[in-house]
Amino acid sequence: MIVSSEGFDDLYIPVPVARKLESADSQEPQSHAELMYKIRELGITCAWERLVDMVSRREYSSKEAEDKLVRDGFTRDCARRAIEKAITLRIINDERFAGSFIRMKLSAGWGPVRIERELAHRGVTLSDVAGWPEEFLDDENPEDRALELLERKRIPEKNPYQKLVRFLCSKGYPISVCTSVVSDYLSRAREDGAF
Image (tube, rainbow, N blue to C red; front, side, top):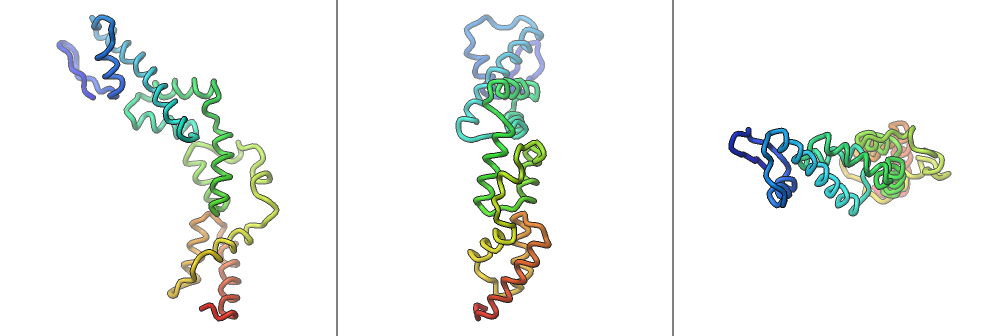
């Protein structure tokens, strides 16, 4: 939102901050410095309120939450202060986030490569996650998990090998696993007359 006042330049501030600024019972700021201080303090308060609302719906990594607050219009400083408070209060915990993310994505059939890539995008490295991969990946080898995914999928009529390898690679399995599993799967399907 753009706030303009006589004698002041236009300021771009998030809508919740502007609403609080307009509804504040205190007297109007008398100087630019006083206005900037008030906006900053209200920004920190509103960023915290927004963050609490966000984490009440789902788990966020610290980077993901900070980026969302910045996209919502808060300054990077306000977002960082809210995140620091949330980390101190253990509302945001990157390791807890990573653990739940990994379990959820493994149950959806994702492979370790894709999980690592997505977590890195969210600001979490797997080396920081205690127990990765031993505690998350059961005794089942990646070939078995990849085969289980293929068995749920219909064999394409055109270019089945390429499409199925691409499918497994998109799920985050190493190319060596993808090629061997698809080759075995298609040869068994041919023997069974499935295609």
